[in-house]
Length: 66
Image (tube, rainbow, N blue to C red; front, side):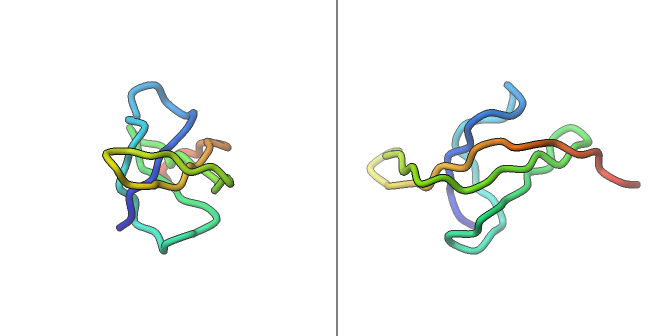
């Protein structure tokens, strides 16, 4: 699990999240209310509570298959 900053996506999804991904992963997905919300890595870094966190930007959402 890594902590990252998420930009865009659903308004209820907090900007700082812990996601299951390898450090520096190009893409991450977060499950949120029946959807997979997909984000891509940017070159940005944001300081949060004294830690430099990588910024991921929203690109699209897909429905969770049942």
